[in-house]
Amino acid sequence: MERCRRPPLLLLLGLLLPLGSAAADERSGSDRHALYWNSSNPSGGAGGSGAAGGGDYTLEVSINDYLDIYCPHYEEAEPAVVMENYVLYMVTYDGYLSCSPRRRGFKRWECNRPRSPAGPLRFSEKFQLFTPFSLGFEYRPGHEYYYISSPHPDQAGKACLKLKIYVRPSNDSLYESPEPFLTEDASGGG
Image (tube, rainbow, N blue to C red; front, top):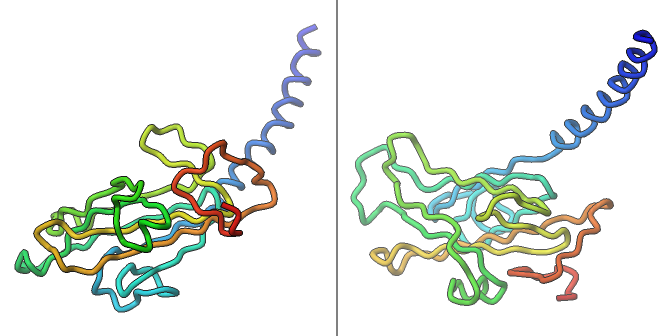
């Protein structure tokens, strides 16, 4: 009797192991994007290579990709008036156009330690359909999401930095949120 139980268990393990490795392969297919959030990076502007400075910046991501945002950091002793500090907001399209967090936007992160001895502050965002975290955000394929920053009040007059995220649709992403929140349908459908 004992022999009859072992082969099915081994067979079951043999069937489950490939499923586990397929799930790991799917997770490892995600990309990690880096963005340096400052106004002085010469690579900035739309189509730039990873900087928010110089105007609008658009980034296309897929579900399960990551975005690392690096805050301005200064190793040398710079005057406080030169150092950049930002509050980053997730906003609606109107808030993005006007660079105003007051239009259904909410504070996402704060770049407020430009002299941190541990290096630049880094905030990470995972683009996922569902999040287990109360402060996480859920993203929908085929939609755009918008981030802006406003300088701290003592730095009035500094540039407004903007980021547009487009979540690429995939063949297997059929999830539809019951209520679109802070999103614009890239197809123009709302």
